[in-house]
Length: 66
Image (cartoon, rainbow, N blue to C red; front, side, top):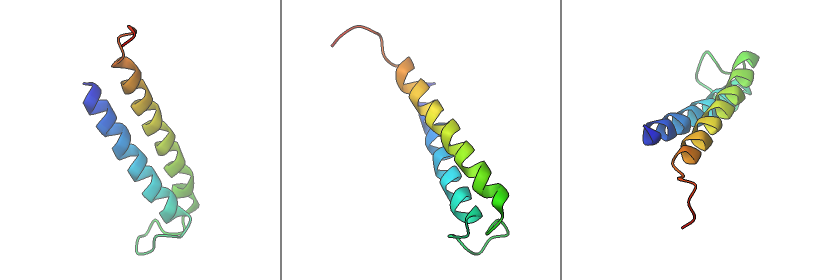
């Protein structure tokens, strides 16, 4: 389960970065290019992905030192 959350988080971060770059017009060749909506949705996906990664990493800790 933990690995799945980390993978999902990484995928969301990657997709969010692509959406952001397309929305800002840096990645051309898509109907999403230059559309401000994607420049807003992208960072939201990045934040959600980071939260998933952090939560998964914390859930794997047992709380016992070394």
